[in-house]
Amino acid sequence: MLLRPAALLSAQQPSAADQLSQLLGPVVEAAVLRALAAERAVQPQCAADAGQRALVRLEERLDQLGREVAELQGALAAGRAAGTERSGDGEDGGQQPPETPPEEQSESGPACKRQPLPLAADSSPHEPPERRACARSCLQLRNQGGPQHDGVYWFTGMPVPVLCDFSHDGGGWTLLLTAISKHGWDPFSVRARNKNSPSLTENYSILEYGNVIRNLTEGGRFAYRIEAKAEQGRQRWGGIWFAPRHYSFVDETGAQTDNRRILLIHTPVIRAGGHLHPT
Image (spheres, rainbow, N blue to C red):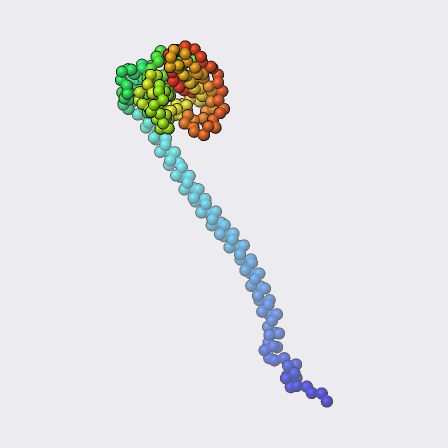
């Protein structure tokens, strides 16, 4: 005997809702497809309209910038014309008077001296003079020509006076240090001692300014001179060396060894000291 449940029998017969869904399904699907097609057709047109509007705005901005440029050019031309008119108002037909030499200018304060004389020896310690030398170092003063005299000068831009030697080994040497005795020297005084009183007969040092003087000229190397004088007699020893430009006068590492001696000194003389000569 076979048994068939009633629920299974009823499931085999479609309901009214199922029948309606089967009838309307194709219609709804077709409507959706038509709507999607219409949307795709509208989107390119919207994008084209937006691009057209952006192009119009850009053209309007370019026109505005063109007008502003034209106004600026007109104002510039008017300014040039006014400047030309003012420059021709003078009796000299618009020509500016020639500049006076630096030593004759006075509007900005005391001028410098192109051909300075050494400071008076009895004025030590030296105070800044009213008019300094136009040169910035002993070597620059030598290179500019004219009469040169050994002695103390105060150069433009230098915070201290310096002693220049124009008489030996080509001239243009700046005294950096004189050690007459071993007393009073320490790591501080060896850098600066009696710095306003350059001397070959008294203890003196401006080593802390050595690098500043070295940098006043161009070149890959600089020259320095060392001399020593015997306590008794007139013998002296020393020489002249070249060193790389980046070497420091206050280096304490002991690594600056690339020095080349170009002259050995061993002759009678009464001078002593350490001199710098930028090359």
